[in-house]
Image 1 (cartoon, helix red, strand yellow):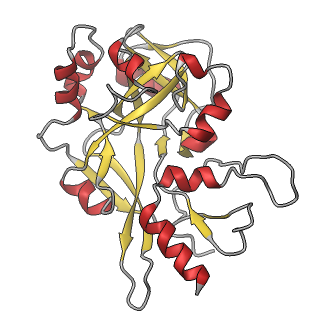
Image 2 (tube, one colour):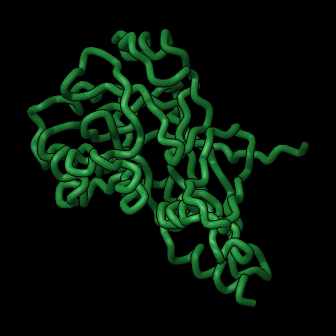
Length: 278
């Protein structure tokens, strides 16, 4: 009974980033350590990670959100964006489904260097926290930034005010749908792979500080509201025709918020990720 109650409570009331943060608590044998996240294949329905904590015997956690893919090599990315990738690379392309909690280095195009494709690490660390990024991210996960609040949030407001916006190339992102199960209090969580119709490579809108970045989010539009049917959020997607405008230093705060929260529907497509039968 206690196990069912705790599982139900945590699934209903804790944000995915908080659930993941719990996974970094000290392991039962007393040693300090983080539970390593890692890239996973797109045919896995969901991954359960047992908590290394006194609650570990009671609760299984499903890591939600914070997953993207870049299934393209450097030449394809350069051709799509009409820019060269810097010779110094931080990762080996292509990337399959990759978790933010692995803190991957990712190709990005920044407002300060709009004519090249550079690399930054997922999980924005503001300059005042740069001395201990791990401690900062453990306390304050900054893999996503709520666009409606980013100008006021301490972790993001400097990057927003400085116009440190970026394009984050992806071929897909992933979100989980909650489905009610008859006879169960907790819903089933079904993963979806989401792409942009007619655009094998497309851009998420982000912000950066130093060598780190965060993906901006907005309220979900029609398709994403059906998939992400609890929080009803989605990443900010920058249409190809407006990628240059997004990087412009001339944008005002109102301009940026209009970009992030425009009413025009983005043509997304989604497929349910099927669990391997093997």
